[in-house]
Image (cartoon, rainbow, N blue to C red):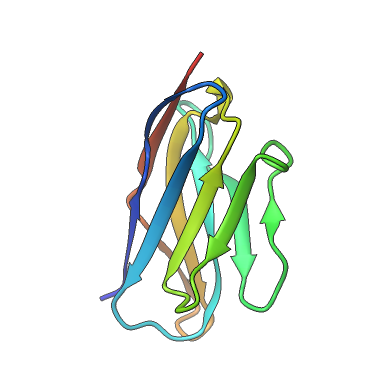
Length: 117
């Protein structure tokens, strides 16, 4: 069974940094893309950053220049380096994966990031 497990969330002051990690466990084929989404209280889930296999990264305008998505060589872990954090970045951050082989999305359970002013 495929699982996505996030880590690295926590409480940080505005201007600080956090690094989120997401590790894929289980057997999975044809990962088309991996990425991060977030959901703030009372708001819809939104894209933060995606990293398509063989493609270029894609960032939400609100995080461009502050967040960086990357993936390890084994392509089983995706990271989100978050710098210059703002209170409006407070949200539950979800790891996402799409597999073309299974034609479906996979989601992690989320990790909470809280940025205090």
